[in-house]
Every structure is written in C-alpha cells, then in structure tokens.
Image 1 (cartoon, rainbow over the protein chains, first blue to last red):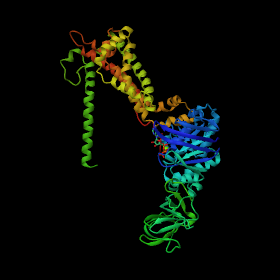
Image 2 (tube, rainbow over the protein chains, first blue to last red):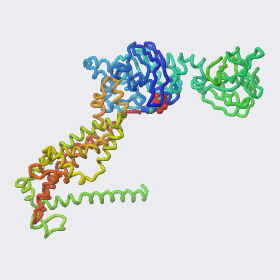
Image 3 (cartoon, chains in turn red, brown):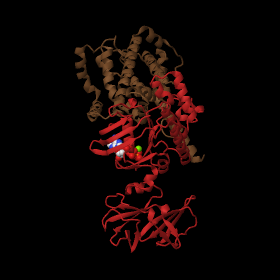
Length: 358
Length: 277
Ligand SMILES: Nc1ncnc2c1ncn2[C@@H]1O[C@H](COP(=O)(O)OP(=O)(O)OP(=O)(O)O)[C@@H](O)[C@H]1O
Ligand SMILES: [Mg+2]
C-alpha cells in the first residue's frame, strides 16, 4: 500500500488542454472517488496514474517515488476497466493468475493467491470457465479478482459497475466497500453514479472541465458545496437554484428574488450590496404546507411519486421549485400551497464567480 | 411459415446452388479431362463423364515429367512468401492500428500507391534491379518480389483485425506487468489467429497461382514454379490436355489441404467475452 501525490498535473493532446493543473494527495489506504460530468478528464487522470497516458506536465508520485517515467508494469498498481478487459483466451484462473505468472511467482503461491481471491469473490466454481461463458456480473467479479490477487500499491477503478443492472450494481457496491475494509488498499474510483460516490468514498474529488472543483468528505460536498458546479452536480433530484440580488443595507441580510419576494438569510454574506447572487436549496429541505409562516404561494404543476417519497414540482415567484418529501399525498396537481426555505438550509453563491459565499 | 417466405427461401437456395455449380464446373471439367483417355478426348468431347477412365496422365506427370520439381519450387516459394508476409504484416498492422507516429500518413499513402500500378508496367524495372544481384532465375528472387507485392495489402488486412481487438486488453496486460511486446505476443496475437490464418491463406494462394513474374523472372526449368510448368504441356504442335489437367488436379491438392488446416482459425468469435456483459 502507498500514498499517491499528484502535483500540478496537466494533460494536453496537441493544442487541446484536457487537464489544467490537478493537485491531489491520497493517503495510504484511503478510498478516493473522482466524479464529474462526461469528458471532464476523470479517465485521463486515472490513466496517467496508471501509466497508460503520458503526463504532459507536473508530477505523480506513488509511495513517495516519482513515476512519471515508469512503464505501467513498473508502477505496481492494479486497474479494473469499465469494459473488464478480460483475456478471452484464458480461463478465469488464467486471467487471475496472469500478473503473478508474469512475475514468475512460485506455483503454490499462485494457487493460494487465486483460490483466496476466488473465495472472497465467490468465483470458486467458475475457475475453469472462459470469460465468454460468464454473465456480466461474474465477469465483473473476475476483473476485480484479477486486481486483488497480487498486493498492488493502489487500485484504480474506471466506472467498474456501469455495465451492470441496478440491482447487481448495488450488490457489487457493497462488495467493493467490504473488500476495501478488508484489504485497506489505497483506491481511486471513477464513477458517474452519485450513490456510489457518496457511499464508497472517504473523500470525493469533484471535477469539471479538467479542473478540480472541490475535495472533501461526501457529506462535506453535499452539505457545503464550494461552488455552483458542485452544488448542482451532487444530489438527485438536483438542488434548486434561484438568481437574485443581495440586500443588507437595513441590517437584515436577504436575497430579493423578484416579484416582491425576498428570502432572509441567517447572517450577512461577504459581498457588496446589490451583488447578483444565486440562492440554492435542496429539494428535501423545501417545506411544503397549506399555511407556512414566511412561505410563498406556489402552484403544484407535477407530482412524481418515487415510492420512497414524493417529488413535487411547483411554480412560485416565476420559477420552478422542486420539493422532495417522504410524506405521501401532501398535495395534488393544481393545488395552491405554501413553500418555505428554512434559513439554515440556504446556500448562497456569487452568480458571477460561482463561489460559495454563505 | 407463410407462402411468401417459402418461395423466398427456395429462390435463395436455388440461387446459391446455381452459383456453386457455376463456380465448381471448371474444376469438375479439369478433373474429368484428367481421367479421360486421349482417344476419347475429342470423340466424347461434351459428355459429362467419359465412358472409360484411366490414370495414365497422372502416372506420366508424376513419373516422367518435371512436374514434381515445379511442385516443390511452388511449395517453397508460396510457403516462404506466406510466412514472411504474415509476420511482417502482423508487426506492421499492429503499429498502424495502435500507434500514431510521424510520417504515418505518408507511409499509408505510399503503400496504397504501390497497389495502383498494373504489374506489367513494373516487370522491366524489376528485372533490371534483380538481374545484377543475381536474383533472376532464383527462388529467392521470386520470394522477394512476391513479399514486396503482398505486404501492403496484407498489412491493411492485419490492421483491420487488430483494430477489432479492444485496446483495453493490452493495457490490462501492461498493468498486470507485461511489456508492450509481451502483451502483443501473449494477449493480442492469440486473438488475431483468425486474421493471421486469413492472411496466410490469402498470400499463399496468391503466390501459388502467380504466373506473370514467375514467367518473366525465371527462364530455367530448375527454378520454375508450377503455373509456369503447366505451360510446358503446350508444345508447338499440340496441347496435351490430359497431362495438363492431371497436373492441375495435383496442384489443387496443397491449396485444399492448406485451407483445411487453417479453417478452424478462420472461424470467428475468438474474442467473445473480452469486454462488457
Ligand atoms: N486521444 C485523444 N485525443 C484528443 N482528445 C482526447 C483523447 N482522449 C481523450 N480526449 C478528450 O479528453 C477529454 C477527457 O476525456 P476522459 O476520457 O478523461 O473523460 P471522462 O471524464 O473519463 O469522461 P466519461 O465520464 O465520459 O468517461 C474528453 O473531452 C476527450 O474528448
Ligand atoms: Mg471515462
């Protein structure tokens, strides 16, 4: 196991810049999840750590040792591909033992290692099969097995579960978490899936357009997003965002949202009177009721029951407001209700820079 | 099945049958004439099978003509050409498929260019080049020329096979601890066997039946290949059809055997299960 230090790493394909200086330190044994929209450079960063992609500028260290010039085989990392990339002409056992055979490990040691890994992943009855005779979930487990048979310095995962159906994904997510608790291996995990990111990560790294937006614990990112991008990206249904103007002259800091509506804030924000700001509030924090103190009138446009709860789409002060509630039958389509934004749940961002200001 | 489907199926089968008959008929005729006695050749000219069959022609061709020598020469030339071309085009095709390098565009362009000229145009210059090197009238010279002319096309062919193999596989191998060459040898090559078999078969048959260069570059009997040898059955005064056809039948055997042995690699589906679920 080892730590990974990424210092001002950049990537460009010719004139096209993909990564604009990424700094990140991953502790020994930490599970870090990279999230971000498609094309933001997550895979590129992961492949640079693996040595499959040249590093245009900056430095990557694994276990304190600079690896920029090392071939993938000399970096001692394991990687699970989205496509699994199993060797089709080898059996499951052959796939899992390949890395050990390349290292000329003794036969008995190989046998012990692969049977141990097969046990962990319930692959024992499948060891003599070829990949084409396996289901998608089984292939995925073989890919995991191939990574864990040797004890690498770090594990890299590039959307390893995205080809599985929802149920299996949930199951494998649990398996990966258990595996990590067992092995305590330094891991970097790329995903699109919010829930995977939230549940697996010790720390989440949110990226956009080749720039790290925020690094922190899952709840940090969820509760205190550093900017509009992270606020909008984390959470489903997504956070409500309303543009408005910051007012504080009379000693009562608030945001004017138009149509005479203004929302009071808990305290003054570090910005000038009249600044364009964005108010953010998560749907599950929006209160909905017949009569609410400090609430605004809203009309229900759409009711989406999810079974687990209900998503209400309402229009108020000329904007769409989404609310999520665990209660059922809170309102019907066409109802006029009150919605309210509890002051301690409000996020304030500077609209121009996108940065969080309160 | 509806009536329409039945009609369509029958029409389909009939069309295939017609095609197969059309393609195989000349071969059948070769076989027929090779066993027809000389005295019946013209008298029973259009009968589908002669009233009397003999193996005299085969006997003569094998025991009293230079045909075994031609056959051996052809074997050497075709096998060497096929093997050399397959090795070169595998390496070249892999490079074309996986790497981007300076001048790639021009190399591809040049390779295409070589495919554009009618071969007849090139015979004189090639003769001129080979002759001072002592490579005319020799099997090595012929192999050299065949390799040169087959490599470009075979490289494109192999490239398309490599393109069909996911890059992830060799990347996984490299992360597992293989060098790029080990990954190529242990992971990619076994999966490209169908492609290599196809290339091998294609080049072998091309070299086996090549006449133009063999005729122009070789003048002695010692280094003649079998297509050239076939012409020796044509004399000034007559054509010995029986012997010629018997030689032809014998020449078909290696090509058939060759395809028989490589056909199991030609079946597709070796890469099944590599990726996704
Ligand atoms: N060989 C290449 N040449 C030029 N641009 C490339 C190359 N490979 C990737 N890119 C670009 O780099 C950017 C980042 O790609 P990357 O695969 O890292 O995205 P990603 O964050 O993993 O996206 P996804 O979530 O869709 O997998 C993309 O805009 C892509 O078009
Ligand atoms: Mg990706």
